[in-house]
Picture 1 (spheres, one colour):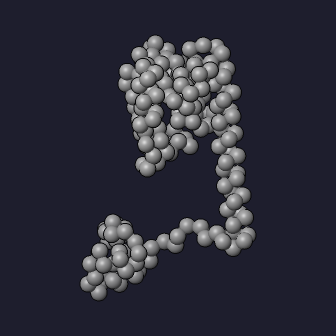
Picture 2 (spheres, rainbow, N blue to C red; picture 1 turned 135 degrees about the horizontal axis):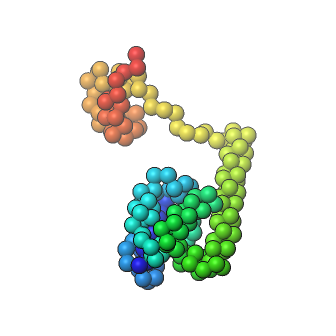
Picture 3 (cartoon, one colour; picture 1 turned 60 degrees about the vertical axis):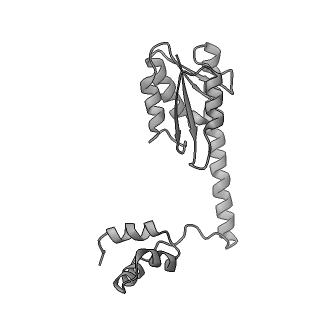
Length: 184
């Protein structure tokens, strides 16, 4: 059986292209999720897919970065699959198929390259932030919400929707803060 796994990093992205490619590859079942992929922590659909596969099955993904972004995570996934007698196939990188020796070698090489690219991207981002700070244009995160002001507005009888408009925050944030006991 070929079991598919599809992942996008954010809720604004679409899984449809991956689903189409996995279906074209003959996947009998597809697990999918919208979750960041820097690590495998908290990726429930991936865990479910690995738990689901049985001896002789193949886990298929469209691209290697949909599965793992670190060599360690990739290696651990491959070990878990191998222990169950399962293979891994990466559709858009046809040389990656752990049911063959060449595929295993290709996987190791490309996994190292993927991790290197992620590290380089992180370094470039850090360089950009440092440059912006040096030029005085980086503001970082928004300041946290002034809970004392919310308490004052609530004590004055203002409703949550009005408080949210007044402070330029979401109404859900006001309700969430109302549920938290005061730190005073």
